[in-house]
Structure formats: C-alpha cells, structure tokens
Image (cartoon, rainbow, N blue to C red):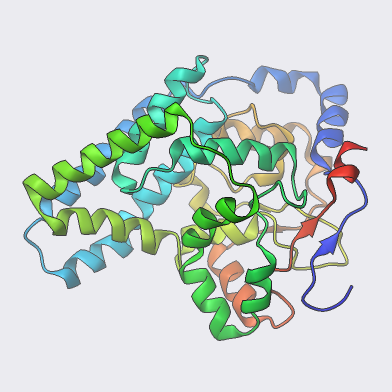
Length: 317
C-alpha cells in the first residue's frame, strides 16, 4: 500500500458472514433481538437534565458555561447522539414511527437537527460498510490531502462533527424528506424558545456541549476507534471498546457485536460476547478512547486514509 492511501478490500464486509456463523452455532442469540424497554426513560431523563442545566446557566459567564459544557454537558449531548444512533435501528419501540419521534425528542438539546438525516445515512453505513461513494462514514480524498501532520490532525479531530455533517452532502447527497422537515421545525422551535425566554447563553451552552463533546473529548474517541485501521497487518476493519464509558454511550463500544447484530440493543450486546466468546476474543479491541485519540494524532502513519474501502461491485459479489 502507498502511504496516505486507503486500504482496499477485495472481499465483502465481514459482519454478515460472521452473523450467519454465530446464529448457526448459537441460535439463542435471537432472543436478544428487540427494543430496549428502558430507552424512553433514559432519553427523557438526559434530555430533561440537559435542558434544565441550560436554563440554570442562563445568567452565567461564558467561562463557566464553557467549563460546564466540557465537563458535564458534553457527556449528556454525546449520550443523546448515541441514543439517536440506537433509535436509528428502531431499538426503543417496535413501531419505527415512535422511534423517529423519540429520536427527534433526543435531538432537542443537541441544538442542530440531525436525527432523521443520521438514520438515512447510518443504515447505509451498515449495509454498505466501506463502499466507495456510498458509506459516508469514510473520509473524503480532500480530508486525506489536507490532514497530513499532527497540527492538521488536531484540527480535524476538534472539528470532526463538521466533517461528519458535511461529508454526506459531498459524497452521497440525498434530497430531504418530510421527516427531515419535521425534525427541522421542531428543533428550530426549541432553539427559538431557548433564545427568546432564556437568552443566548442557555442556547450557547447546548451548542458548546455538542461541539466540545464531539471533538477533543474522551467520548468522541469512538468516532476513530470504530473503523480506523491502526494495525494494517491484522486486516481488521471494525474494532470494539470495552471500557467504562460504555455506560454513558449506550454500549456503542461493542462495535463488532453491534455490526454483527444491529437488531440487538446496546444494553444486551455484552451478552453476545459472553455467548460466543471465540468470535471476539481474538479480535483487536481498545480499553481507552482517550488513548485512541492520542495515538491517532501522534502516529505519523495514521490519518483519515486509515480506513478500509471497497468497490460497490465487490460488495455485490
């Protein structure tokens, strides 16, 4: 492989075949499929706490707001972002419409409408993992060409939410649907209410919580840990994290397990590893998302190009 170029795979993504093998050997895993009965309560509690905090800080100084946003609000908003990830798989209710409304509700403290659009692209990430021009989770060639040193990687990590938001518009643009307009109207309504009744500081707290929580932050380590290839000799393209932050992140760290079984809620993914340990114990995994961020920035051999890609024809085959 030439330096600063993507890894190219000539086989299909590994999760569908591993899922078939595991289910053939352990059919009882199907009993784990279905919604998380506590999802509604968990989302409601976090949304309520974050909106209350925003109101409480309406008269605070910007230094205090930024401090609370980084050490508290960032964890809540990132939790809600990952709740939206869970809801994109319809893992709160059996009815997809209820999941969509709960996703829009979970979106409120994030400040920017993204729940419905995220689902549209995220399901393609599962179905077409790494497929060139389809999976918008993979960085663009522009990112590869611009992000070539430690300073550039620091900036890229700090603003990675912007790259995630803009990348679909460049790689695989799709016209907005009616649900996206519903998401937009409800979100703008909440944003306008916060600004009108509690001022720009309360709204600024919500936006800062989203921004800092998605940048140089321990929770944001999952963006890199999930699919960036740190050891090209392994040939592995999905990585799990088994550290304590899974409690705050809907267990998204169990990422191999999640891609193998996207119909199992995060709170039960650890059971997959317990039932079928031989499929996961030999896979490379992480114990610290902060260490992942540091390694990504410090290692000159790593960058936005450290991803596995495949052609659509390979996927179809």
